[in-house]
Image 1 (spheres, rainbow, N blue to C red):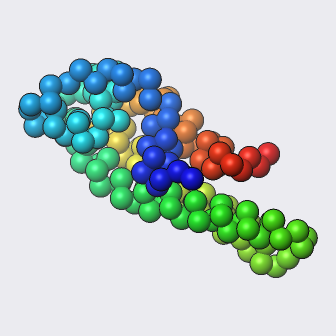
Image 2 (cartoon, rainbow, N blue to C red; image 1 turned 135 degrees about the vertical axis):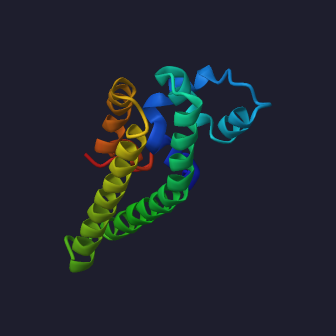
Image 3 (spheres, rainbow, N blue to C red; image 1 turned 45 degrees about the vertical axis):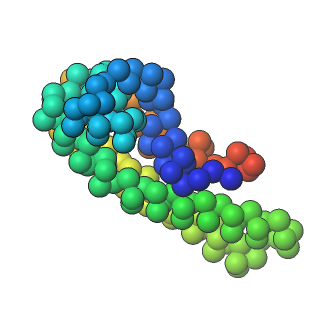
Length: 156
């Protein structure tokens, strides 16, 4: 079972994982210390060419969103588990199973909306070229939740 933080990082930055190899940021400066704590931001700075001011704003938004996303990931995991448990009872489509299906969908929709809001706020700290590149990389992960399913469960 995935830890909520790992699920969060995968959800938010799965497509950007390859860029994290570009972590050649000095760890002795304040900027480096911040990136050491949130290495997923290294690609944003490197690939998008953010200024120090932009990086500070993006980092602040990211740090503020992180706890909300972690909590949402936990709720998604719990909804998956509940749905799996009820479906495994093999009692057909009960009212309880219908409610779990709706809850599962509602939590995904809530998470998707929050993630999109965060991405657009983050893009708002960038110039139009940077924002377009950022959104092109990130929107596919906010719009597709197939990667958020636990690996032991594949619903198609």
